Length: 226
Ligand code: SF4
Image (tube, rainbow, N blue to C red; front, side):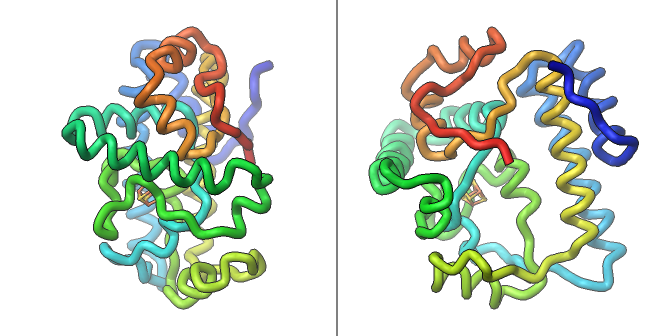
């Protein structure tokens, strides 16, 4: 069923992305979307009286539960395949498999109460930074103490991080517009567990074909759209 958009940043992004997807692959459209998305966040941040506390090397949030849409998983897998050697790719896969095993019997909610290092965080840096997911792009804080407190007390889901509200509104709307355009073009728009989906993308070529055919891309990875 076709999803509807309200007149907003989401609707603006939807119109652009929907038109681009008439000619471009989801991967190419995602890369174009990233440019618009990052620019929107930069514009809002520049106008805000608050400033981000995030800095390279601060990676508390990269230990929280990560989910990503199928098209984003493929973009990150493509980036890894193009930029890393076999040994490095194997290390990433082993790290993801460790996380999968650790969370195998956990519900979505329970999974959110443990810290897991993202397999793409190496030496406290994101190794897929240019193509990191929308949720990773949107995450920011104006005070690192909330991120640190969540990291130190992962079971306490009531801890909030201070952020710039306008950035969340625009970033969320922008992401919704792109993902809805994908959905209405018939592509899988599930948000998958990052670890399991990433391993499938690297080890099972069938998931790329399923995605192109408009089917559920990842079979073993849990998904939750929220
Ligand atoms: S993909 Fe990159 S930014 Fe996102 S959680 Fe992993 S290391 Fe952090």
